[in-house]
Image (cartoon, rainbow, N blue to C red):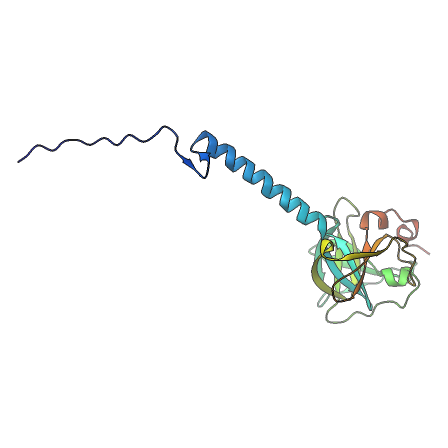
Length: 194
C-alpha cells in the first residue's frame, strides 16, 4: 500500500467576505447591522400610524401611543350613572375594567353608532391606563412620509382634543393626526362626571 501524504490546508487567519473579516470583524459587522436595523425600525415606528375612522372622519394615531385594539362584538358595555354622554361606559376586558370614550360626542359631533366593525382602541399604558376610545372602523397602518401635510392650522369642523396635524394621501383622502398624549392631558377629556 503506498504511503499517503497528509495534506494540510492553511487558511488565512481571518478571511474576508465583502470586506468584512471573520470573527472579530464579523461580530462588529453584526452589531453594526443590528444597530442599523433597529434605527430603521425606530424610524419606521416614528412615521407609521394606526389609521382609524370615527364616524365618517379618518384619523392617524402614532403607534407608540396606541395600545391594544379590541373588537366590541361580544363585549358588554356597562353605562356609568352621572357621567357625560360621550363617556359610553365600562368594558370588562379579561378582568380589567376599561372606560370607553366617544371623541365624536366629546367634540359635540354626532356620537358614533356601535356596529359590527366597531372597536375600542386602548391608550398606551404610559398615557392613560384603563382608557379606550370608540372607533367605527380600523383601517390599517399608514406611513405619513408618503403623505403631504396640508395644514398647520388644525381648526376643523369637529374640534377634537389632541389634534396634531392634517395630511392628505395620494388618493386625496384627508387624515387628521391625533396625539393621544395631548388628549390624555386635555381637561375636557379628563372630566367624565356631570
